[in-house]
Image (cartoon, rainbow, N blue to C red):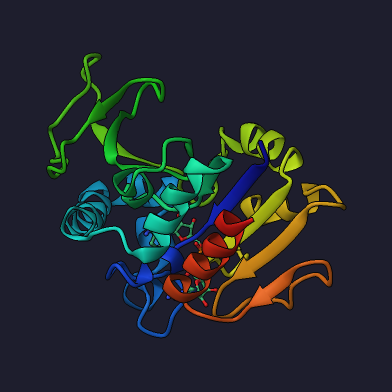
Length: 227
Ligand code: NAD
């Protein structure tokens, strides 16, 4: 069975109503990274950080998977599919994808600020100041902030290196080390990118489909299911 690895970013969830980071109406237009998504921000103003991610979580709870998420789940009937996502939303899982690795954490989970192994299901609820883990430490969102290590990176790298087909969807490839995964794809793997814009032009060995995720992804999946 072929191994297909899909590497996704905020663009795959844009048509579900979740804002990307870098679009002109994106999240960073309204919030500075340094104010809400760094360990320093958490130390300086945890209330603002909690509220920023509480808003993100409410948005995710209200959103539904779109045709791109659903097509990737359908692909599992014919191939060994692994999704590596930079997204903190749970739309891949809600569409039915079973092997999903979150590089940058999961907004639906809360984490102890004293021990990163202690995770708690928020069930979609806000994390409030004063909500504590079993050790008595404040809960924070289970997301990887800028400047923090990416603990799942090695696992993602191993999956990437084994892919027969590697498909990138909805990412500007601007965030590292995530974007460096592309360097580890086998030379003879089939390689595609479905995304509207890129920070730099894609490598020559990637086919760039410059279209919306809900258009390009179902079409590719249909082709793969037909062979
Ligand atoms: P990004 O905002 O840097 O780039 C988004 C990319 O998606 C751009 O290339 C854009 O052209 C493309 N795009 C926008 N709408 C699209 C559509 N309908 N179809 C196809 N492509 C579309 O996002 P990124 O590269 O994922 O980068 C950074 C960080 O953003 C990640 O660390 C991630 O954790 C975080 N993020 C996650 C979510 C989420 O969980 N849904 C939302 C916003 C940001």
